[in-house]
Image (cartoon, rainbow over all chains, first blue to last red; front, side):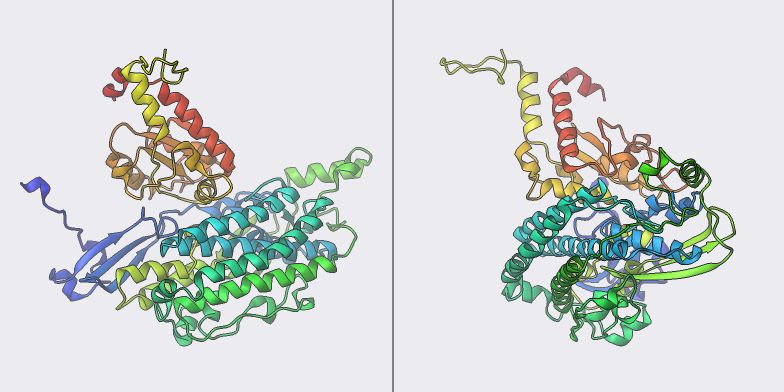
Amino acid sequence: MSEYQLQEIPVGPYKHLVSERAISGETMILNMGPQHPSTHGVLRLVLELDGEVIVNCVPEIGYLHTGVEKNMEAKTYLKAEVMTDRLDYMNNMGNNLAYVMAVEKLVGLDVPPRAQALRVILTELQRIASHLVWLGTTALDLAAMSVFLYCFREREIILDIFEMVSGQRMMVTYFRPGGVWRDVPVEFEAAVRDFIKLLPKRIDEYEALLTKNPLWLDRTVGIGKLDAATALQHGVTGPMLRASGINWDLRKVRPYMGYEQYDFNVPVATQGDTYARYIVRVQELRESLKIVEQALNKLPMGPVRSDNRKFVTPPRSEIGTSMEALIHHFKLWTEGFPAPKASIYNAVESPRGELGVYLEGDGGPKPYRIHWRTPSFDNLSVVPQIVKGHLVADLIAILASTDIVLGDIDR
Amino acid sequence: MGVEQKLGNMGVVTTTLETAVNWARTNAMWPMLFGLACCAIEMMSAQAASYDMSRFGMELMRPSPRQSDLMIVAGRVSRKMAPVLRRLYDQMPEPKWVIAMGDCASCGGVFNNYAIVQGVDEVVPVDVYVAGCPPRPEALIHGVLTLSEKVKGEKFKDLTKA
């Protein structure tokens, strides 16, 4: 008989994080993850349950710890960039942008206007792709399967555009210090314009499926309320903060890459619940599309990378004819360029919030220290507070609405 | 003569039990719903609208290892995750197969460091390696079809040995 008895999960390491009632056995400790269909990666949550009501929630992270920061310190500034794609794997272009902007700040590189506009277009497309995956997987978690299929259909179009410009669907490494890898192909503009024309109708479709759907409203309205004060205390940023009523978007408050030239709104909601986060993200899809269209309309002609040969590799065509170009190419890819002994912090608005890079140079060609301030980490830190008193099923909705990416949290 | 050949008009088909069982296994292989990192997103793409892996009998991703036949290790396996991965593998019923999807799961990929297991074959036996960082959905589907070919050639006596 004994072998059929349920094994009790020991409270052990979580003793100080759960209530007295858990230790006396009155409430139940339930383990959720790291393999669970709705934890959006390998997140483990230790739940203390009173019946089906959550008393305490203890997230345990680190199941995807990759050592990205350490690995980047072992590579030159140019080569370390490939690591950035793999941090937050829904926001590859955005990670590239945060990193290359940090390097440009550190060494003092200018970016040509065409490259800046291309960066804006592609980062905004990436934001749309990320929000589409969020919408699809969240709807899937809350049992709306068709939305998942629709969202991935549109995401494929964006990935096709990425493949067109960079040769890769996800790990693009397209932005380089001083510009972008190479100019976009001629088909690029038509492809993006087709997408701009297509997506608004498709967003209407998603909204028709969800926004007034009573089942969706039941699962999201009033669930996981986050007030502005708590959000600020925990360093929550991005759509989650804006859904709690605080108008804070780095693209508006500290514009970079020429975001000040574009006319767009920052969607804000005040309720702070799961539904508000959904509304904010869906509005952001439309706003991002507006930015893409404006940037495409005034996309300037000209070079796409800086001609400062001490930091930027020469174009392929020059290498065959110019001795200096060959030397620069060789030196940059073998030794890399030295960066001054200084430290800088650069932040961009990722689909999840403030994505920051702290970069410290020591005069050599490799970063002395690099640290990522990732939005998912801070956004997750508020989850234990807002799930208290909710049902286990609501935890799924709340966790999905925070839009965490474990690669972003664990690094 | 095998089931995959023309049936003729007699309404009777002769085959070996092995062939029939293997044929059935390849056409209803349920992968475990288990994503680790970037590759999991491409695995989802392979399931979703454009690629639709259910064409190969894989429309059911089982969230429980006890109901699945195939583990797709999609992404990098950290040292902290490795024991969990092994436990999930042990919980799967026989016969079971493993696809190492992507460079990280196959050999550590770009992450040659302290945190990442340098190839998931250190932890579980791998049947098919799919290259790419991350592999395209087509590459994953190719990996699955390669596994099907492998399963079709399996002998009962080899399976019981494991």
